[in-house]
Image (cartoon, rainbow, N blue to C red; front, side, top):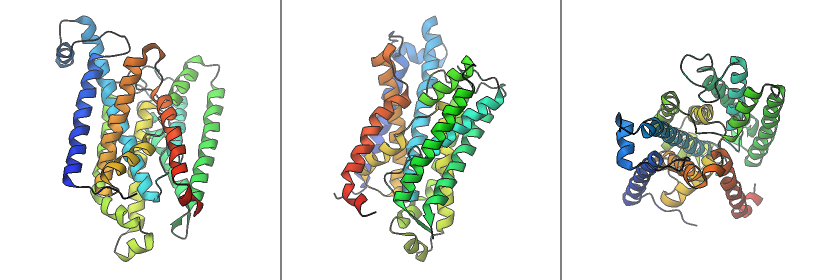
Length: 354
């Protein structure tokens, strides 16, 4: 199937619709929540800006705002990380979750929780707590270690074997999943830590504050700043590393910079929200269907659409499902799993040649 060309009109429409969608969903998130009580939009804005006179709205609306902003940041990080990983490995079936990078970040963050000792389940990054810097640091170390391991094991003579890549990702996810279960079993008698780790494995956007927004927003900004140094090079590398090198591309620098940017984004998202899979797999494919595969546009558009997708999932879960609301990680796994199966099935002829 011929991919659409990234015309200015198509790009502008995507940016306009994506930005408008974020604003609309953010406003709806302020006025609607899992409590079932709807706050008038004007009242919600006044409560957010300093005080509406409604005590309930003044206390609830800011919490909804922080949760929505975190959803935007986490979704943007995961969408961008997915596009970077797929471009880096030249494989549309790659994603931080499929390759084990998200699991590595999760294990590192959970171990940081154990090391820190006391972590608040409601707000584990509250300033002044001993774990407020250990959790993101542990997530970054875990994600970077797994990313380097998968990259090294799947590479041979400068080439990356796609079947090896997917098999290693499967093996790494299995091992890290077992390690997470072992850690959880080790703290099973500690109900507080056990519940924290369990909530972490499901992913959560609840009970967030400005420090979470700052962490994930800063990581997203840094990852976005890498786009001018990667976009053209990643496009040239899609035809092969040898061809890209003959055109003057420093493939080693590009691969490490892309890996670092993807790892930074994925680890920050995991440090703030726990494991939320498949955003990085689904979003880049949707972007390619709309504007094509040029990384100059694909990377920022994946961040935008990732933010929109996670904010939409969070709003649907909180407002429409309410008491039966599912954690975002669970909902996206239910969506992303069938999508991944469809993706593999639709590419079965291509897979047969690997």
